[in-house]
Amino acid sequence: MVFTIQNALVLTDQGYKTLDVQVEADRITAIGVNLPIAGDTIDGQNKLLLPGFVNAHTHSPEFWQRGRIPPLPLELWLFELYSPKLLQSEQIYLSALGTAVETLLSGGTTIVDHLLLLPGRERETIDAAVRAYQQVGIRAFVAPLVHDQSLPTSLPSNGTAPDPQRQTKAVLDLLEEAILMHHCPDRGINLVISPTGLQLCSDVLVQKGVELSERYQLCRHTHLLETRAQQILAQEKYGCSAVEHLKRLEFLGPHTSLAHCVWLDDAEIDILAATGATVVHNPLSNLRLGSGIAPILKFRQAGVNVCFGCDGSASNDAQDVLEAIKIGTILHNITDSDYRHWITPHEAVQMASIGGAKGLGLEQQMGCIAIGQKADFVLYDLTSLSLLPQTDPVGLLVLGRPTQAVDSVWVNGQRIVADGKIQTVDVTMLKQELLRYSQPPQQYSTTSVVDVEQHYRSVMGLST
Image 1 (cartoon, rainbow, N blue to C red):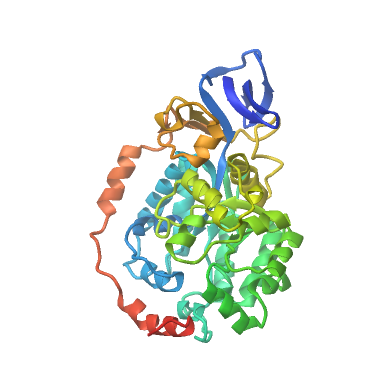
Image 2 (cartoon, rainbow, N blue to C red):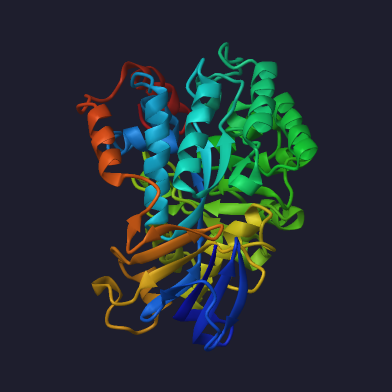
């Protein structure tokens, strides 16, 4: 595939410039003014060309629960999440499609799916998600969410107990089988070693996961200190912080990304900076679940790489990357009175693109519009009502409420979205299938939540 985008507005280090961009196969090969035409031509007039964003943390199967779970803190919300009847493998496929489509139509070209696995059908779950991402054409990092401890042990002062359905060796065998079957970066599918978090994982599982990641040269991903309860639990279990414990287990590193990171102190922030780990900021779910406001400005000042994630659709409850970027940008203006530390729209775009790429070890291949980079980029329609009048296009894209602003999306040089429409998926059919599998509203709360709520309130110092 060879094509030339003509007269697109491109954000450079020197400001906006109207440029032509040429692509051969999966790479940008030329950038300049009035380039000789090569291959097909794409009209970039009144369009903004930006690198694709990375939706750096989500859980696609949660698609079926969005809008359903009432306001609850994470530890109780989890019992609601796992309470409805198990999904079918076809639903895993459909939810991955839906997650990818919403990501693409909000400027994302790469997704990190911390994939919830159906008990007893783990391999089937991974296969279904991979099939969906291959069909859509999005660059996917499939991160099977694994643990070997039972859910109640994620609460402080609740002991430890192995999960009878998640034996450590069986979990590790599953991961290696999935790697051998599906890991193929050239086809846009990458496997990730991704324990759910220390609150549900033994040290053996984490350490053996690190060994797998090094053997197969894979990224690592996990939840970290999303809530105060997890902070309390780490001190109970390890006598130190979760960050210090992950460092001892050699989990942290330049190709490690950590979702949430809300309850960290300055010393722990310094550890992340020293190890080169990336923080994935999920502002919407942190607010939805009352988890807190992550110290993003402190991370940035310490030199920690930060990017954005939507988180799963049961705690967001959408996959709008631009919405996550907006909230994750302006939320922190209330955490520091020195406005010089605030995140600018241009910085936010860099965090969402090159920041996301760096967390996956791909900063030399994607994340900016430059010769030699992967052709993963997005054209935004600057005649869209939500991007008018034309002022600072990036400022309005980040701080405004862009709707139907994505004109075209390319991933690996392939045009996945054209004229605002997905080219690789029948979206009408997708909507029909999502409707067909939809369940009527359920009455909450469930028995499982009632069983643990009193203990949760007690350990968190809430009146009972």
